[in-house]
Length: 198
Image (tube, rainbow, N blue to C red; front, side, top):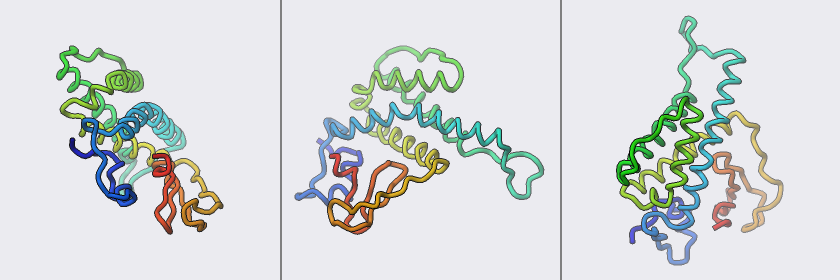
């Protein structure tokens, strides 16, 4: 078996294992990372809705102009991210439908219903998606898209303060909050709430 391509085999996690050996995929992703991809895929619809809502709110409040332009608002990286999310997921749905002879994807309407329908369809077929030829790339793209969307929405959200309690591993007041993953990390000993959950 090959090593799992997920975060379980990041250098940070591997260094904490007594033998330092990589976690094997089952057959491609380990069970923990399969669960992570499933969760992140399900969260993409809500993350896109939050990002779209933040964009609508900004539009109502006025648009920013790029310095030196005469009136046209700057293109939005948020719209680009939402478009990439939809096109990437639709591409994976089409690829898996073709690989399994499921027939063409139905027309679903505008952006929000199309994204919701695609996420639901991919979620219903996730066990197969995580074992077919494109499984590694599919999972990596879901995790990357989720990380990008949640970091973009967390930039607009009020920052969460790190707790004033000490790190459970080294007992120092050095915990920081990572808004992209919603995990706590210790600056002194590298402890993280993510590794504790494993």
